[in-house]
Amino acid sequence: MTSDAPMGNLLSRTLLGFSGLILLTGGLMHAGAYGKAVAATGASDLPAFYANSLKALWLIDSATLMILSVVFGCLAARPALADRSVIVLVAIIPAATAALLYKFIGNFLPAHMLLVAAAAAVVGALRLPG
Image (cartoon, rainbow, N blue to C red; front, side, top):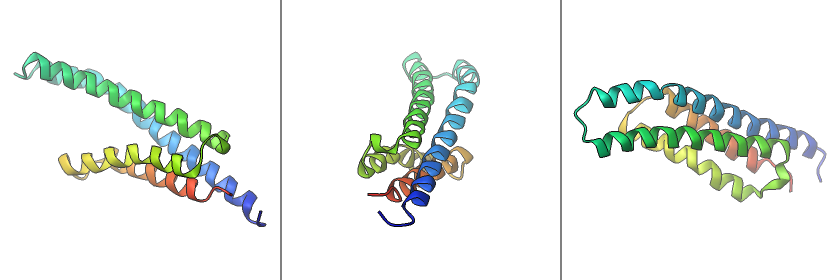
């Protein structure tokens, strides 16, 4: 163990916790906007299958963000629960979601939040000692 290992561990844990906090914030904001999504589908002429799919996907995304926030929060508390490579693989989830948001919506605050959360988790994972 090098002399900077405790500081690296603190930074890793802080970054993982920060990632979890961003994802929790995003998940709660997304869930809070569910009513607007329901109103928009109700005012549209989407067939019922697509309107209901949008509602389900909306809540699925909110749940995914909140579950990932719990995962990163647990990893911040106990980094030994997962190997670096596993943490990086989990961080691909918000990174891929951000990439799809950029592709289909463009410059969009939630995509930025997801990208920052993913980057913080990756850097935190890579800075874990051992």
